[in-house]
Length: 183
Length: 183
DNA sequence: TTGTAATTTCAAGAATTATTGAAAATTATA
DNA sequence: TATAATTTTCAATAATTCTTGAAATTACAA
Image (tube, rainbow over the protein chains, first blue to last red):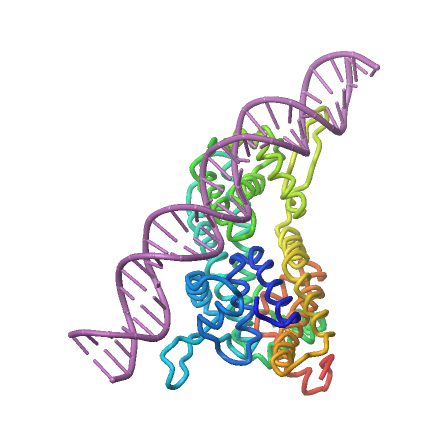
């Protein structure tokens, strides 16, 4: 691996964590390398710096593109494909959250919705369906909230986050004024 | 698999999704079964209903306990171990979030903190460190916020979520009054 | 077009992870 | 303490996923 100790450490860490995040080691490493790189890299740059096969890099880049975590860029007078991560870490977070929802949450929501339409056949199924309803309501609430909040300007989102639990004061006030959206 | 079609569907889905959540198929299935079960189940119940080996169930239950997603219970006059998921889905969500943070976020925060203490050796490292700082700040902000909010009463949390982006009104108001915690 | 550079696909082997039955260990209680 | 019930561990193998070099495909420039 052709990196300074500091950068190697970072890249290796992302490789290791990759498996916990649902991508393999090489995908994690490629992402990490692109994230800290001062300029876009082409596949051969990545091969050279990470010491993995060209085909592996090709597959890994495809995977990262499918997550919309790296974008393809072209440099003038060079026909090779270059890759870069978005500059704005808020945008990265948003993309990651959207993709995770699409892959890890939405299929479950669909299944639950479908299951809740069935007529329970006995007491056990009735109980199971009640549990599924609880799960569905929670996930629905969380994802709806997240989808709404995510659409805020990064600056507003940042302020909201920094405010933290202080917002509860306002939530209390809103409740007293009967202004909360539901219930 | 010894389940009604409705329940089997649910259990199989969790098995499939398991790999995306970072657990294997059997762990996902065991969790799903316990989640919808009207009463706690022992290992042999699980073996019978899911048709997997006793040892696999033992390993899967250990894994779920390490996630604090199932708890061990004992029935009077029965020495076998029974297992159940918490009743409150909010509690389940909270546990899941805490464990995910511990396993998937905290190690990265540590690494970033350590990397940011190093003296950059050249321009490239300086840029890399700047990127790591951006990442660190974002993750720190998100996890701190989440940790705070998570400690709220479920009822308050639910109200907050249902309010959604409406809170931004109050955030605006707070800013105008110079009351926001920082900056 | 044709030739070359660049990228992707593929099939094989390597590595990792999951699953199992059998044996061992643990636990409760007679 | 001995026994029987229960749970865990382990080592073998099955299944899956990853990695690779070579071949095929695609994109582009002359």
